[in-house]
Image (cartoon, rainbow, N blue to C red):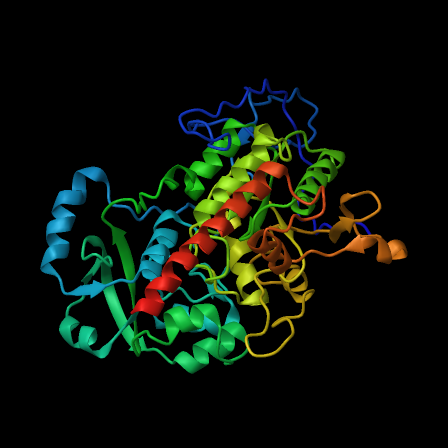
Length: 481
């Protein structure tokens, strides 16, 4: 089975570079990127004059374009208020009617403010919401189309709507009451929850994690407007240094002289099958003529369902993967993607791909059932496992992104390692799902040798041991109460 690549790029032109070694300092981890460098030439565009009898005067240097792929809609938005203006803006925000945000609302403020949803500049007004909900895209003023498969909206209840009254602007306060942003030129419109759920997930079955957590308890109105974020969103959880913005990632790709960036989205620990896919993708890009493809290992850092491995545990596990040499720190950037997870399958995977365009990735790896989950009420997958990669190959607004459908990897019980599945030897392969992997760790059973690096597996085992210890201490308290 071959790796299929949808190409939309011309043959690259390369320069000779002296690559600086990557240094990972300042944190107790090997996957903390070095300080961000301001610029390096990556791609050249030559303007060839027509042949003339007289000598041709060439410009002394080619035009240099530092970005591998342009952000959707042009320049990246930066919605964080400049430091010198924050005092005045905060005073203004204090004088406005307030909207209290949930933790997940704050994650969306983070996403919008850094340009992951470029060119979106705030929570969606009704026309943007309807385009996203029904067309999975937005039409810009110049007539061009950008992908926008998930509505990014802010819900309010009737009491908050009444309190806002006729005000054109509102202040946004976090869960603890601290002001974090101003929403300007607001528009309030109806929140039809059933329609939103049906069109986003393709079902209204009970048990959808994001629906249960966010939409059902939300208010019956949506409020849209332009964001001004009073200061950068920080979580103070020891992981903020991994939360590189699209602008920072682009600069880091430039610093490393990347001529291709391939992104891998995941919400599970990295096993050797994942590593096989990522390393094989880099090999294939090198065979295509690229000189320095860089992997963006980009775990999702927002809301996830209760049985997923928590972000801090996953980041520690990813660190061990690099320490054990499964992935090369010199050609890998590990960063956190701040978006909440919807588990909306082919609809959501478009959002995941679109956001990586804005971060500067020009290749996106997609596998089986991306952004999917088991059906909440039936024993089957909620989505066809092949539809995600098929949708990405023809989604409006994603034409400039090169989609890399990866080959299926499984555990080869003969070779005792993760390998690409060979249908002619199907009986020799063992498929270990994320659920099965978590069951191994939870019960203390070791997976087959070669499934995951020892350091990474130890992190998972310790996490589940801590959970079991916590549950054991809670049970006597429950009995006594």
